[in-house]
Length: 543
Image (cartoon, rainbow, N blue to C red):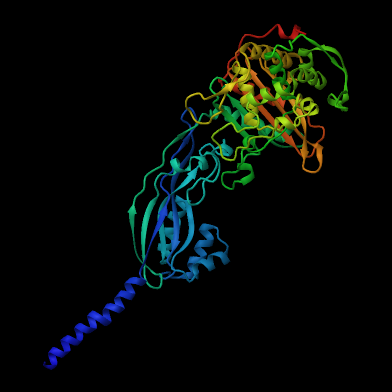
């Protein structure tokens, strides 16, 4: 074999063996990864098609540290445009990694400015990804229900979290090719993704606005008020028309605690609002009528324990109707005793207490109702005026919706769909009798601040101290509320307003929740949502 042939053979050996090993090692060192960018998220609308949340174009910005030029100018740019501290910007620019996220889902205008300034300054190494950012065209309206999304486009709270899969669509996939040292070789779009589905809610943005305005006014006006919510339902369908919470979260910097809709995720003792439901059970059993008379003296002994009226006040013999108007605890204790533990407990279960309602919000709790075998005569007595049993706002609203619609417990819902019946609470006749009594309560009793001429509001207010672990009932921790409906004869709307304080022992429903119900009715009337009915003229002469 000649020298030339030997040279060729040697070169082949080098290519096939030595070079193959070298390039194989290089190929193995080249890394591929996929970056997922959120697709355009589905919009969220109210029942009338008003947008509550939708996506707008945005940029996510990354840095190829391997290619970066003029790092000090880039640091200045990041401080100016992205609001980074100088130390944070420096750490990102001089990071040893070859791919560094600088910002996710920044405003489109901000991203364009960064691009333009970087180009003018001769800064290289920046990578711009077209993406989306959540916008709230109505501001913080219903934000505790809507929730928010994270920088990765995924839902973090509210219906954004519960329906995240449908809203998210299919993410856009970008494949990235890196060299042995991590430097960026190439990137290309592997999958353009698909937009998410729209979501329509039962909320009416107009009623939601009225409720949020009133809760904000209440928190600013009522001394010591720390939080509040207002619920408006259609009692015939279970649809939630408004669910307002205050203080309201800021869409730009949402507080996780304020994003939790406490009407669904926290419990409270309903106080005297519960008297309407105890009375309804007694009416349904035929044990009590609205004009039956009872002693209003205070206290009465139950199992050797004195049970008192508010402020220890005693009343003369009075009708049930008048006892409801004056919110007399001891009369309702006597009514509950007529029911007995077994029947009362059965009605409370039928009314939906102690179990979740199934409303379409994450974090719903079931309330607190001790098992039947642990109830004593004293438990029954205090339950008669809404203590010793803890409920959620949505449970209480659903129970009053059953009272309003003639006795059918419906699943409260935030999404349109078929009516879901959960059970029968009481007869239509018993419900009508109780509604008439509650119309009287608003006409002449403790509920008068909720009265709006021409709208025939009926309802029951309540005030209850809050029990804290290891402390029992604390005098300056108070829940006030009013559950109402109108018109009381055949209600179109159920309204529940609740406030809480942790710093005022003189916090009463009569000057907090009750007037707020009246203001919500007036607000709905002013917007043409609710119209006057025939004035009720007989209730004030009853009892």
